[in-house]
Amino acid sequence: MQDQIKTFREYIERAESTVFFGGAGVSTESGIPDFRSKDGLYNQHDVQFEKYQPEYLLSHTCLVSEPKVYFEFHRQKMDTRNIQPNMAHKVLARLEQEGKLDCVITQNIDGLHQKAGSKKVYEIHGSALRNYCSKCHKKYDQDYIFDSKEEIPHCECGGIIRPDIVLYEEGLPEDAVQGAINAIAKADLLIIGGTSLTVYPAASFINYFRGRFLVVINRDDLRVKAAENTLVIKEKIGEVFSQI
Image (tube, rainbow, N blue to C red):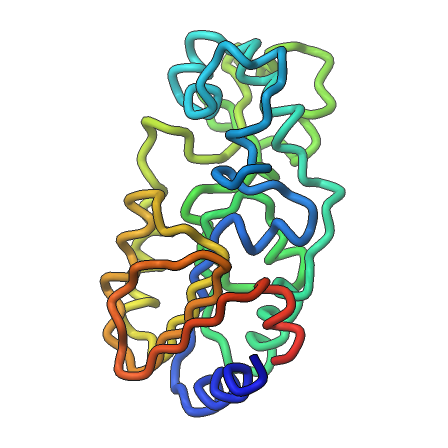
């Protein structure tokens, strides 16, 4: 792997504009399970939720039709407030501070990039650390849903207070999407890490990349359109970034 790390460093030094695009695998080393691996969220057989499909529990339909079920699942599985950033998060923040990384584009909702110090982060699936009223759009802090005594948390206006995450059947936030696409289109180096590239439309964003250097860090094989200089590193993302 040392030759690959050397090449990775060279790409970072030579690139005029660098963007990181990441998924659930970035946060697994912090103790947050991904979705589709054998130990992932979709394969955890909780008796309480076994009659439901995982996608349903994270859907707009569940929130509206069975809010008690939705909020119980959310409280049990989506509480990342006490989770700490890992080496990948920290090094990405450092690269931004050094002027070597333009932005982070993340599919994660855990807020760990910001906790590590990253400033420019496009959260294309939202964040579990923000909450708002679905009726009047009043904002609530990150603790509100988790600490609420109500099974279904309500705003003073009567609306349901929900997390600011993109559920199945909902559209992606336009500002984050446009910012992410523009950043990828302008990037000289695109780093893809910790994502299976199976969640659409987010996975399609990398099709806008026209730069010179592409680095893919993932334990499993990914089908990506090769750039002029493509580097594939099949190692844990934290181990890779610890050497950058």
